[in-house]
Length: 211
Length: 211
DNA sequence: TTTATCTTTGACCGTTTGGTTAAATTATAT
DNA sequence: ATATAATTTAACCAAACGGTCAAAGATAAA
Image (cartoon, rainbow over the protein chains, first blue to last red):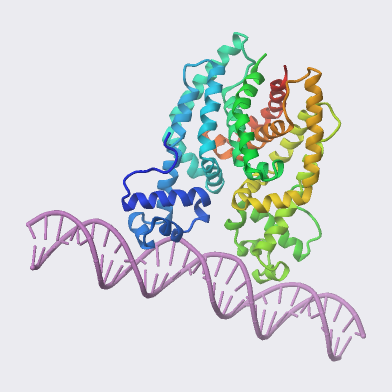
């Protein structure tokens, strides 16, 4: 899954995009400086404005590519044809893999979500708006059927998805608090904690759905 | 619980603190402008520097008061003498009440957590460092005992607390995405969604712990 | 080789921002 | 009333920032 640095041809344009990606992911729109992006790309600041007219435009390029790098994959999962427990296990497993490897992505998204909510939702809507409701409906039907067959308690798809997302994303976004207070800033202990969650979270959710 | 605007004596100092609180909560340190704080307090910009030497110092005052306004209460809960399910119900109920009424607080904390992780953990450590580990140990003992008596599956306190926090905080922090994509920006529908979670979350967690 | 086009640069500009200062105003004490 | 200290203001400053511009280098076509 190509969610980190794109190692494409090192044209000036790509150098800029990669540098911008690193800086924006780390510091958000307001916290980032055009000069730092230029420096990291090894070029003059004016060149940034030559390729991308202004900061906003450059940001939008990066923003959209970040969203597109993970959103569609995640979506596809919840609409698949597996059983409900299998869906949950795979969703959690794949999702945790992605964000453990790219913890900046959820942080970045949450940051931009609060800075400019409309922009984020518009972008997501454009990329996969129809799709998300379709896949969600499929999951909802699966859940309704499973609960009628007495396999799980009744639950609607929105709540289930939010629960999964919460349990996967929050512990990564809140790393500084968790690692800092619960584990005395012991990075290794925190990493270990996250790993045990990989098995724990899916089973916890599945168990929570049992009758 | 006094987590919103302190209605104390309207001295200039309090006017400044209240204005700063509003602005900082909404826009974070970098996004906030001293001029805006001054305007909102109805005073001259230079007065800000008369009362609080600089932006950083002013921010620290606000930051600390925000942390102190909810952290100790939340802590006290997990170390109480209730049964495990009762603890979970009360924790979720009280916690959700607080953050539904003050959704800016978790957003603000997450924002500052990523901007300056050390600052946040130092502040929390100072305010309630010893306490958090004590209360957590108590909860851990309760959980061990309950699991030995066969009432719940074995689970350690850290995971349980993180699970509760995740399920409570994330849906509020991610409001723009959830309201925007799942509910077509229908604010009322989203509010209703959050309310149903009040009953759902606690039962979901308790059920997830059952053998 | 000349010409035209694309790429890159250093120097510069206008604004915004956090912060200062000296003077004016108000309150307090004698 | 008067001197003293605390509070408030308008005007100002230096630095940082996003952005522009004219000119210099490279590249390719004629």
